[in-house]
Image (cartoon, rainbow, N blue to C red; front, side, top):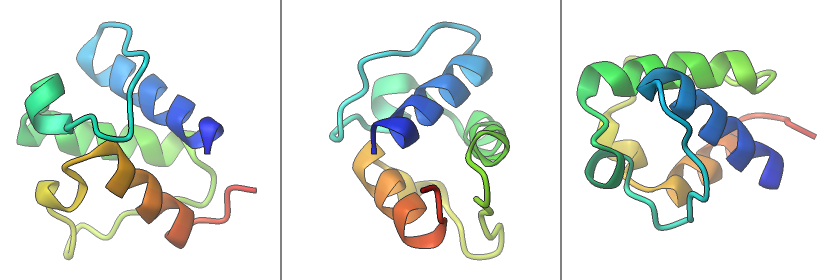
Length: 83
């Protein structure tokens, strides 16, 4: 799981143009990091590049699907074989 968390921090750092570190499972991506809808989509696309085999379905995905880091990690672990 720490590898996934590192990938999330790296993707957020790229999208927000500042180093993001020390995320917790309870971190709220929108509220705590001020991730608006455009940056959220950029973040997911960047994350797809960083996690092998990860693909988000844009037809069923909304920002509320991943309010917290914990729900995003759960999704990745359930839908992607990251080793």
